Length: 405
Image (cartoon, rainbow, N blue to C red; front, side):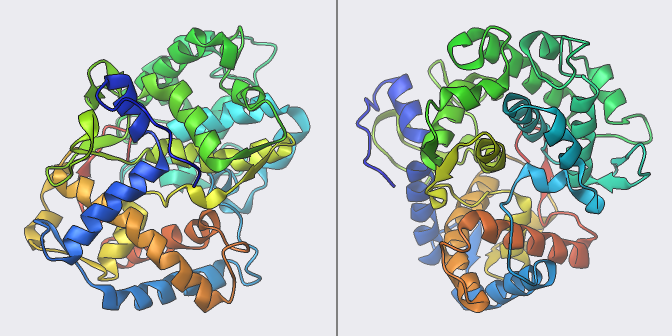
């Protein structure tokens, strides 16, 4: 995973830097998983005897969706293919690499849970799409229409001025939101895009004079990059966009939350990092970067994504069980220790599940890195079980602000 970088964890900047790595995510998730396996978790029990059945469920879904086992990466670009429509082809013929990264960044930032009542009817095809596919296709068309561009004659771009001019009503119109079609966290999505505009404006050395997220392509400065390097670039350059609350001093931590059982050196004590949206963005950038001629290596440095489909798979397959069944019905927030621990256990158990899935499919880690196991895969199996058990709802009732789940 590369050599550890020495930082001053007694300073806010150093502690934040130490927490912005998948090494920190895995180490701390592993500690909470060991603790739960020892029976010391207040919230969960771990049932290792259910891992094989969960792996078989994931392998079966993977074979059904990809009988040739040519599984693409888990990526926002899969949602742009919803309904079997190849929306990408026309865009690739019209847009350059910077624009494709522009689209990826804004679409991922708009990809928190939509809620159970929202859907999007695609102009032209008439397809009615909900949840991640609906959000993906809606954001695709919003981008193509120039919603995030300040240049009417150049709609296929995202820039600082275009983001600054985005209003809640304009985003609501683009996503067909009204009183009968509510979207969870609409204001949170607008706020995060406004912060994206401010961040790109403040870093012209990365995002150029116009503040385009696609500047990340040029910031790599070569023809290859490790996945961890790409994630570090995303975390470092976009850190200020994440909602306030998780802070060390004046340093924003992003998707990083408190857990009473975690220790750690200096100011990192008590924090459990995840960086789910940043990792989802990094996974989603793999293809646009390859189209730009940049190869991203060492993909398994990234972790599995700790969100409600992957975490739901583990609860619904019995690998994890709630100590108190009433926790399944009470409303919880992303900062609740129950949710923090659920997500941490999900990270570790996805790492353990991946080789079991590969063994059943007869492939190795080179053929099916975690980015493909997730797509094949754990996310799809989690969704399938949720549909069978609860009509698609997650196993915990999470109050979302539209920025994490």
